[in-house]
Image 1 (cartoon, rainbow, N blue to C red):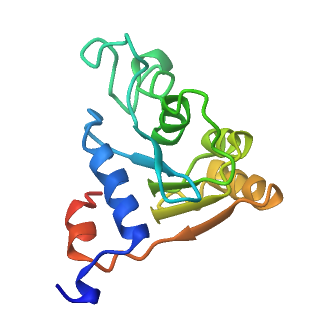
Image 2: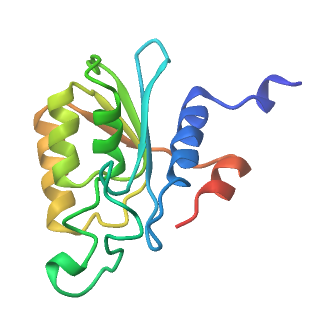
Length: 161
C-alpha cells in the first residue's frame, strides 16, 4: 500500500463520528461526534438521540407542532452525548469531531469540558442566532474550530445530509 492510500488521523476520527451518526433514529438529521485525546486515543463517541430510558418509539421525532410534540425538548445532541458518555474522564485539550457545527448549548458544554479543538464537516445553520452565539463563545474561550474538507470517497459516501 502506498503512503497516500492511508487515511489521515482527522479522516479516521471523522469517519468514527460519521459511523456513530448512523446510530441516530432521527429521520431528518443524524449527527455523530467523536472525542479524541491529544495522544490520538478515542475517549468517547455520541450521536443525537433521546436520553437513556426514553424510548425512540414513544417520544416524538417531529420538527413542527406544539413544543412537547416535537423532538427539540427531548433530543440530546451528539456533542453533549459524547461528553456525557466520557464518564467523567478528563477531556482537557481534546478534539471533538462532529459532522454538524455545534449549537450554542453544545458549545457551552464543549468549553466547560476543556475540549480545545472542533473539526466539523457542515455549517448549514451558520446564519442562525444559535450558531452565531456558539462561535462567539468558542472564540472567546480559545476553542479552535475548523471545517474538515472531505477529500476521501469514504467520508463523502458516509456523509449523508
